[in-house]
Amino acid sequence: MPVLALKVDIDTFHGMQNLPRITGVLEKRGIRASFFISFGPDRSGLAIVQLLRPRFAFKMLRTGAPSMYGWRTALYGTLLKAPMIGCAFPERIRELGELGHETACHAWDHRLWQDWLPFMSMGSVRKWLGSMVDAFIEVTGSRPAAFGAPGWRVDSRALGAVAVYGFSYLSCTRAAAPFVFEENRMLEVPSNLPCIEEVGAAGVLDALGRNAASETPWVLPVHAEVEGGRYLDDFERILDRALSLGYTTRRVCDIAEEIDRASLPVRGLKTRRVPHRAFKCAV
Image 1 (cartoon, rainbow, N blue to C red):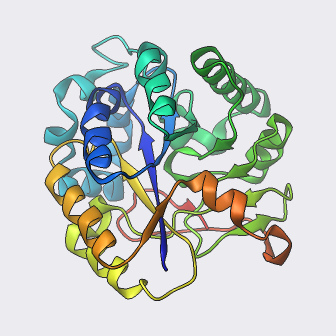
Image 2: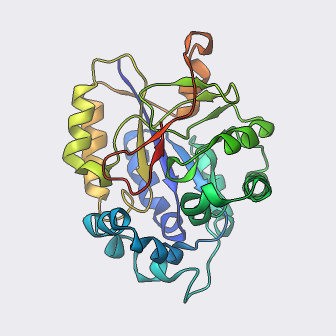
């Protein structure tokens, strides 16, 4: 049977507000997912600098980002104070564990990493990671088992820095299948299906149909701001289609635990353009 895991990224304060809508849809179908949470400040308003990049501006217009995220999100960190994301909703995060979902680390300051990782000093990278892990421990009472980089952006320095935290696995790339990083010998379970905001619901449904006979474990990237907002009905259609195709739903950590790591290829980090994304992604 084909295997499907849902990797739900929470990038913003608005995403945390949408969280009950996502969990409600999953609960109706008995699906358990993996939630990768940003804990620190929501400085989404700083994305205005990126509007000078034609690729980023086109993505914002194509996806209808202003209406999807709301005007407050567009001003956080500039005209409006940046609210904390996961740290402002500790009960909601702890409830995820009670419901049987996986909770993992996604970010401290999502905007900083996604936009400026190549320019961050090594000290800033370590401080960013430390703040994220400390927040996770404070909120959940346990150490995180996984890290998924914002925007699938990671470099060799970051791969070296994450190795000291004892993560069981990483989910930082858009590669085709799981592998072991050459840089730190850590397991990578990639997002290997397209996002709904990249190809639309029809594109995700087509990908599920094309891959239903594959033995590769499939990871569908989901964003609480997107599927928990205006695309909620499409998200339900995608889940129902996956179940009708015979997919067994798993958490990403389940795939990581069950995979035969010794049989996986060892690969070095590469980056390339992923269709309809504003930045190069790790592959």
